[in-house]
Amino acid sequence: MLTRSTTLLVAALVMAVLAGCGADATPRPAAAGSGPKPGGTLVLGENADEPPCLDPHQTSTTNTTVVSRPIFDSLLWQDAEGNIKPWLAESWKISDDGLTYTFRLRQGVTFHDGSAWNAEALKLNLEHMRDPATKSPLAASYIAPYKDAKVLDEHTLEVRLGSPYSALLNVLAQSYLAMISPKQLKEAPESTCEHPIGSGPFVLDTWTKGQSITYKKNPAYAWGPTGREGPAYLDRLEIRFLAEDATRYNALLSGEVDVIDNTPPANVEDVKANPDLTFITIDRPGHPFSVWLNTGRAPFDDRRVRQALTLAVDRKAIIDSVSFGQWNVATNFVTAATPDHAEGGRIDYDPARANALLDEAGWTARDKDGIRLKNGRRLSAVAIDTGVNPQNTQILVQTQAAAAKAGIEITIENVTSQESQDRTGKGDFDVSVGIWTTNTADVLWIQYSSKNITTPQRRGQNITRLSDDELDELLEQARAAKDPTELYAKAQARLLDLAPAIPLYDRPSLVSAQSRVHGLTWDHAYGAVIFHDAWVS
Image 1 (cartoon, rainbow, N blue to C red):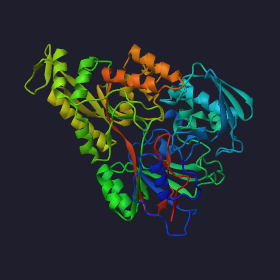
Image 2 (tube, one colour):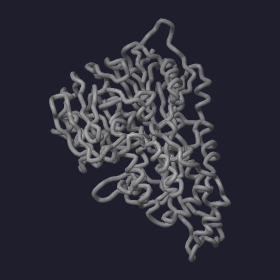
Image 3 (tube, rainbow, N blue to C red):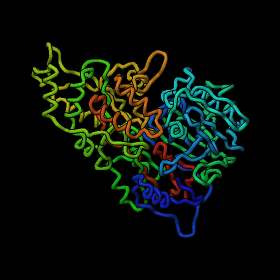
Image 4 (cartoon, rainbow, N blue to C red):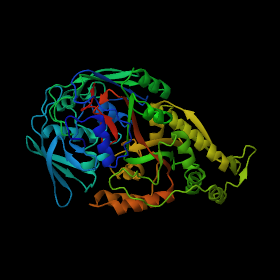
């Protein structure tokens, strides 16, 4: 966490390095004697992964934190070292049995519509997160142990859980569990997607879907979590959705935008060498970017076929070619930047063993195209791809080529983001790619517990549809443990054997900026750039 009100970009970079967050940069500090200058507009170029809804409780896209953090505050804040700090809660107590959390809330906070932040507001938000009508893709999963809450006084809420949950404080620091205006939740809950109201440093101004989101300063803001509590320096913030990597990068070079997120890996070294630009990066916590396999239907309902595909993919070769050396190959199912991270084995590249497993599974014959056959049926799978991120598509294509060498046919279908979400929820796919960023190793429960397979009653995030009693038990024990590290190591070892996904790389945030931009900082609970302290010289 950056704590100086006059933090410059160079200081942010130094602190990120000291915190071991993978920062790398060629900073260009402001002129000597200068400091933060209020006013102006900052324009961020973002990729095409635009959330369909701006209610943080209802969305799970990769860019949700970037677009929602200007509007919303969270109950807690995670600093650069992974420590949980006060934000809208000024203190908390946990009962010895881990079932009761008592939050004392910060006073004097108001939402953009003038409604007050208090215990009732927190209770309303918790209820909104878990309400089936919200159709929360992850907020409900994160607070699944939540039972009920009791208002003790205006600024004290007692939260009771049905079972202990070691990651509760971590997830309450995430933007996905940010706080929405209680007035909006009571009077117009249907408006939270299009016109969300928070208490953050910026107020939503306009949203032109498919093009941009603009925000204006909240002049009353006085409760920032990074040590500088006052309003944002910027008068306005604009996020433009620029789908093509080249378009986004050229917009930065021309000065059309001030900052770009998701810097194309091929351009990172050029940015570092450019005296007019700066570059910062941070490793995201959570689940690595992976190839997901649907274990709920053939052919990947057979563990041996899943293991074979995993062994047939040269992960390092793919990542090196796609990232130009900017990404690190994943070592397991949880990234090294994640609290409670633990290793649980290793993933090998072994084409010979892959072929032996496929033979063992009965796929011994091959057709004229080299695709394996069993009982006259081809070993075929369908992969779905939204095309939002060109690197994702490249990874799928290279995975397709590696699979073909082993005799597995993968057909890639291009779909919309909504269709991808619908089909993965229904299990109507065989292969997909994606990442799940979160600040807790409980991501394993979210991604692989059988409780998180989507049903007509509940939307879950176990898109691999994996169901394994041994793994379920390990993950339930880890959720309740005060120190779950060893349990997560065992869970990852089990996942290596079950092979529901192929972890490829620990995705960093790659952010490039004009040298006139200063004070960019990180939301460490997600690894996303934020703009409360940003200013333009």
